[in-house]
Figure: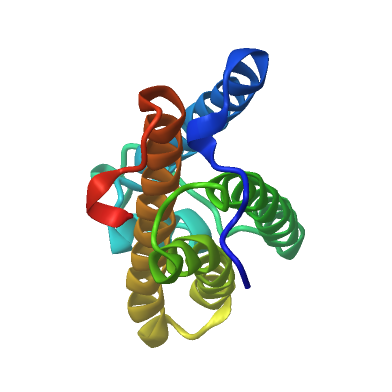
Length: 175
């Protein structure tokens, strides 16, 4: 496949402002979600397990909040909305990033990785909720790793896209 004939460095006027507003708004929404995950789980494997499986089996004196296991309905709602939302987020950001001046191999990795990681993240979430207790911690760590890689891919794609649009030249270390 040939390189794009149009590059982000060529965007000007309302088109550049529109794409910029989209990328910034989407990134703020994504970062708000990350803050919520940190707030509700402490960004720890134990916090993830307790958020999904509950903590009512723990001594009440040590708890700041009682959490109950997520029902199948709640799990389906969470997984469905997040997989669809992440798919659309990364389709939009990846669609913009396609027109960056980044090397083809790196572009491929950054565009495809979030889709794979999204399936791993939310597949692992279901496993953490429903597998026997001895199996849940490795999958909670896998959730954290998949979440981290989607975050890194998003920040790199958005950052590079914004830089190229506003600086008017490709990022040197990746082009």
